[in-house]
Picture (cartoon, rainbow, N blue to C red):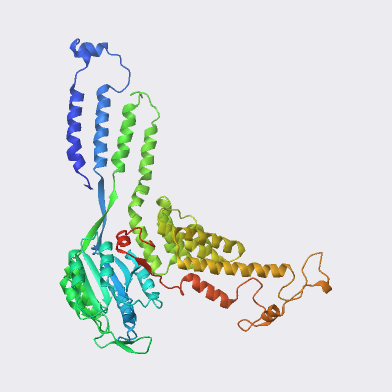
Length: 552
């Protein structure tokens, strides 16, 4: 056994012992007038604890409380964990010159693939993704979630960007704002350098703000691109990029096939950035402070009670001590919260979504309905296909974290849309509208419009059944059938649509329901397989607000 905070013993125990020494050795006021034998004969025997005995109990209580504050523990296990590394801003050039096909299939496509290699190889660094041309766009804030970064890079849609000009100063200003509080400011650039010429101003700015630039030059010296008039315009790789990287204490590499260029830059970044390659040891302790604390409470009840020394009485404090000792496993279980979260993430990465959802749910319930854990549990249920259960948990997420609340409402709408039906589609619309009030996200707005369209088609189909315009064009049901002579005619276009076969089998899709083909397209959009990563323009001022920069 050892103490995590022995300073409480060194600083508090000596004064307490001195104080009780004077308390226990002081004489009674009557001792000035009578000797001890006379006082013993005069004193009435109350069959109770004496003052000296009570003071001794109080002394024991104080000693036990000091021991509890010193936090006694026993060692349970030791773990090897890797040391954390500095944060990195990775920026991809999306200017028009990056469309040059001198690198197959284009400079931009090759840069995105190299960024994916960098994200995969940078195991413990926190990475933020930027895209830049004439302006700078935030693709992702700082995160260690490699799966999310890969998903954003795979869906990076810059087909409509094509910005003319590469403003390296703008991206350096944005990176400086995001890395303002970091001890090591590493920036990984994938660019062709834009205009030819020196980059002395950019180098001076980077040095003044402590930025270390690691640049992967994407392109060749003989690259050309065809403009609107069909004229070949030279777009050579800017040779000044090497001088820019070396002037800031970073490194430069030219894009080559394979991963050697990216891995070389990452190795130099770690070596020059002061990252500790050694693993560090973490010890997990079992807490024992409840034992002296419980015993102190028990002695305190004895000292403050008026029970007789000779009569047998009930001692409720004993039950209190048993309760405290019985509750110690719950206190001990709290020490495994971090391990429970790690286990949930491992289950999720392995595709065991049911177990991951259960682990996150247990953590949430044990930590005051933690919003993040509830959100993760619902995400795992959604991936498993349990849309109703996922919707129930997402509806319970209430947090001041604007991004987390927005994400919960957005996904709540997706879950309701997956369930289908008029009521669930209406609930999905309400969820999307609540999410849009927190953040005007294009994907949320697109999902909202699609669900509205689906709900309108469903309601029109049901109205057609109610008025007799059904699949077979028969009469309306009920005691008051419309006479055949007055039956509402079926429009030819609608009749023609009903006769068209779907997937080789006409008539199997009930009115108001989706066909297999429609459902596949619909679910694919909700799953995000057709989604593109949206670019959000940032400025150096918004980049400094790491927690609330739009859209996060």
